[in-house]
Length: 190
Image (cartoon, rainbow, N blue to C red):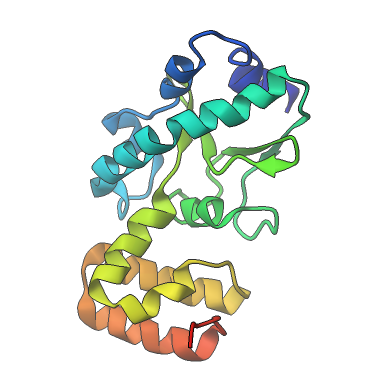
């Protein structure tokens, strides 16, 4: 893990052009298609916009390493209770057991999943938002199941909601949402 940490962060920490270096973590369209499962392949533009939006925050968070904040790198696996919602949803976009890393800086998770490409390390961000945006456009009442990590059964049903939303299949989404209503206990606003 130490080599991963050095490659991901220490080469960037304290760099004057940190924002520029972090932008090098952005996957190319070809790297995106090679890294994600086919269901997510058409959504590179969504990923690209999300990456551009969060790159400055990633740079700010990574800067904390140069100020002495502790860094922790771990493998990225589905069901890891330390995953953020974004990291958990990103697992859905990746092939089963595809190697990836997540990092914590100063005790705070960096809401990205790091993958190694032929050009070095890349970061996947924004998968959760691309799913929620599509599901909300089709059925706003059903998206609450996507915004939190629930029980294993709820996670399985949430995946069905995400899959239907990405496919643009209203019938399938309606069915998945009805399953979610019984499989997931979600805090709803009165």
